[in-house]
Image (cartoon, rainbow, N blue to C red):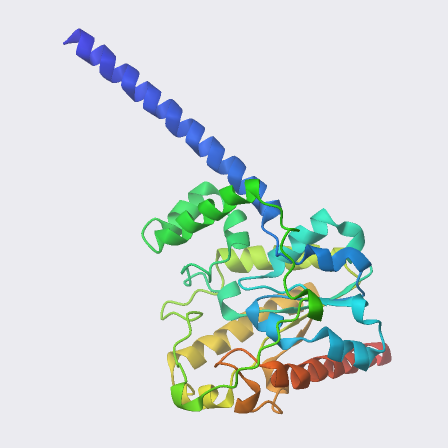
Length: 314
């Protein structure tokens, strides 16, 4: 019995040591990935761009550097789009930490979507990896242990893979300076009214809110100027969801984002400025096609010009 007890104690101690080593490795991977979770668009920073478009997949297909170049009379290679699927402010913060001199004289224009602030959205692809990298292991387990644990599993799988890959090997949308040109036109008969950004238990003032606020303040200190904007939905989607929870949740998101921008002294361009966009300008309910991008880019640039003029007159 004594031998068995001693064996059991030794086995328990061994397992605890293994667990401790495992947690240390996870912590290291988590910290390492915080600086490595970058888009495959770092090469676009080579020419020290004056204007940088960033954010998620919406911005990637919304803001066309060529249109902006023509409007602002700035060389094409000085305006880039580093937005990517599941991209966010933290990705830009990480790029600034890695290439501070590339950003200090740049104007940054970034799209923000509801899932960037909504803690209730934990689904893979909507709780961004960069946000997860900002959480402690305890916070990660608290959020994902009983809700979409696969998100955490995918995150660590991706983070480990980053040890063996070079983000500069893949050059996304190089012909268009990072802009994703989409030909598809929205089929209004097949409109999806469910978007994973919203939940019935929405929480816009949790971990994501705190991380977003801290990240925004850091970026503001390290760039020439930053503007945030919220994308517009296809009019048909707005119409069919006007009495739904999604519409209520969108308003909560807009309120939370306005509070963040006001407290940080950052200009916010909201989606009520985009009435010129029609269903034909969209590829789906939330993403623009190349025709919509032409209109939208001009709207954003003109809105920024107006903001700057108003600021000068104050």
